[in-house]
Every structure is written in C-alpha cells, then in structure tokens.
Length: 493
Image (cartoon, rainbow, N blue to C red; front, top):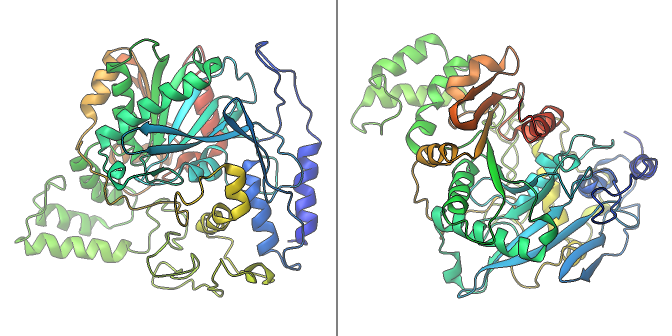
C-alpha cells in the first residue's frame, strides 16, 4: 500500500468528484454526497496501518452545530474539511424518573429524504452499539473507495444505542439500567415518539423497525408495542425486518448441530453419534447425567472451536471486545489457540501510540476494523463532535455486557404471528453464521444462490449468499438491493 497521505488524498478526491443533486420533495435542500462516515475510521486506519510515517495528516477541528435543538455535525476528527453528508446525533430521554437517555446517530436518505422509508436500526447483543452497525453494516466496512451500497442511499436511518447502557446511552441513576427486553421495546417506542415530535418532517414517511442477531427479539417486541399502543399521533409503522435473527431460545440453540452438519463442519459419523447419544433432540436441555451425549458434544466442540462463528468461511481472529483488567483492545488477540498473535500490544491511550510506523494488523482479519473503532470512539475531539455528555460513560465498547438487563421473552414467534396477521410486513433474511434460527432450515439454499419464499400475511424469507452473521457487512450490494426492492411500492424481492 502507498503512503498514508496519498491514500487519504485519494479518498478525499474521490468524494470531491461527485456532484450533488437537487433536493427532493420541496421540503428542504440537502446535497447528496457519498456515505463517507465509515471513512472517518478509514482515515484512521490508513494513517496507522500504512508503511509511511506516523500521524502525518492534521485533523480538522471538531465542531458540533446546535440548531433547533439538533446536533448537526459539520466537522469531526479524521476527516479534512466539512462533512459532505447530513449527520445528526443526540439523546432522547426514555425514563424521566431515572434519567435514562438513549443515544442516536441519524443519516438522512441521499435519494429522497421526504419520501424514502425511515428505519430505526437496533444492533444486536444485547448491548452492541449502533456505531458498529453504522460503520460496518449499513454504511459499510471502512475502505478506500467510494462506497456505493449503503442503506442510506435509499432510506433514512436512525442508528440507536439500545438498550440503555449500550454504546453512548446511559442512565443518571443506576436503577435506570434495570430494563427487560419488554421494557426496552417500550423505551424504543417512547424514543420514536419523542424523536418524531422533534422531527415532524419524517412523521409521514413509511416507518420500519430493523436489526440483526439478538435484535431478532428486540425488533418484533418493539414493533408489537407500537402496534398495540399506537395512539394519536399514530406512528406510520409499515413493517419490520430482521437478519440472522434470534427468535426462540429453544430452537436457536438446538439448530446449531444440524447446521454444522449441513455445512460439512462435522462428519456424518459424528452427527449420527450426536443424534443417537442425545436422543435425536438437540432442542431440549441436555441431561447432565447422559455421559454419551456430553462426550459427543465435547467432540463436536473440539473439531469446530477454531471456526469463525459469525462467518464460517473467514478466519477467526478474535472477538475484538474489551476485557476487564486489560488496558489495550489489542491485547488478548489471537483466536484459534493463539495462531495469529499480535505483534503490537500497546496502550492505545498513550500519546505515543500513533508514532508507531505499523500496527501489523493482519489484513485478513475483519475484526481489526472493529478494534480501530475503539480508538476513534474514545478520542476526546470525536466525542465533543458527537455531543457526548461529559462523564456519562467511561471507555466506549462495541459490545457491552448489560448486567442489569433481563431477557424476559423466550420466544417471539407469537409476536411475528400477531404482527403479520395485523397487516404489518415482515422480512427475515439469513446468511451463514453458526446458530440462530432459520439457519438449519435454509442453509441448503446458500450454496446455490439467493432463495426467497413468501408466506401468508406479508412474511418474506430470503437468504443472502455469502453473507455472514451481519449480512449487510459482508454483502452490502446485495443487501441494499434487497432493502430497496422490499420497501418499494411493488414490495417484491
């Protein structure tokens, strides 16, 4: 790779060459720049990881402009000059008694913000920040080319840090962190009502609730709360979409062994031994006295321990999460028995961290982009630009363990039934991670191409060939096309 300065210049030049289109809908004028927010991290990636000198390029000053109560960001560290797209951040209080505030990022559609869908996107976990979904899924993985396939090309997206305690969301009192899955769905509903009261220009846009992974629970719980309590002013809820979605505690866990066999990760002999030893039912709680079942499950774990659980075709390099007592996000790196060890284990908070010529981050490891996002989100100038309340949280974490959170819904199958029978549209898409529902029933279609099936009451199921656990991150072009077609007037994939 060339020097850092040249690579940054290439990024800026590629964005500058794009023209703006007139504002649509007559509601306001807004340019249509490329979706470059992921490049805020990309610039950081370029400077740190290239073979050139240290932190070579001066960052633009951070600034956040308040207008009508909205924190519209114009400059941020890591990007030279004003941001060429509309980005807004802020907090909405969802629990006045305890001061629980949910943080959001909002990016308006680049096509027709007045008419395009409004999507509330909730990243999974529970406890995974919306910034992860924004940088690596919906807006795309950081790269040195103009990213053409973000969902904000065709929709307005609110990326929400939920439940409280996730990302930059926080509570004034500890009691505010005591929230259940059901309570979180209610708070998401409260958030939307308050947000739309402050953004009435989007009140008539078709509204969708979306998310992936654990949000397979959160999304239908939120949608059903809205549908059940949709009092005046009514929210224009049209439907919801979930990807690789957790759905039912029993079947999510039980589907893993059949999935691994279907993908050729375990042999026929081992699978047959598991069926025989465990009574042919992987969906019930294992009998701790069944030594035969325990033995074969241990054997399965041993032969699959190094398989990447979020994308079985990619190397497993680590989880890229903060570990209590470990100062650096780069320490403890090297999943798969330490076969890929980090050559640098620095304290990223140290002033001399960026003077290193190289971090020696293996390019084949997707999680290294996640690691760099920790650096960006913890930077004081970045936090000032985002409008983060001082002292509200400590170090930012891509995914946080929510000790006060309670999982009080074991299945959302009834939620899907009630919502679709009431006329709300539903899209369930699946790719190829280990576990989570639909995987065992759909994996045979992954290898031969996209498979779509429409069920009664507006429920659509589709697969994304080559996608991982967070399909838009791995297959952005296909997922953008999927979203645009499904939310179009025709509504067909």
